[in-house]
Length: 124
Image (spheres, rainbow, N blue to C red):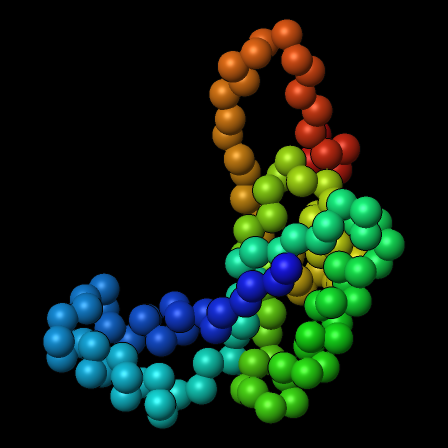
């Protein structure tokens, strides 16, 4: 599964934080006249038996070959990769540094204090 959307913030930035009736009309006008060059990946998942076999990178690279020629998207961002998810961190690194534009930290409370918690070695 792979869910992507245009980065709507590329259009919302023209609305000054408002979204009344006139701003909605302005949004439609901006959407029509200013191309959005950024595509954002929201959800990504591979069935466990296919993980680690390159299917994830294959999906992204082949998807880009189909999506990019017919659209204005020249930039892709994997929106949220948890610092606790080494598989997705490795996918982003395999595809290149441009896919992982920021590092987000996840704070969590361990209800069972007897279980060991390990971060990804790179983020330790």
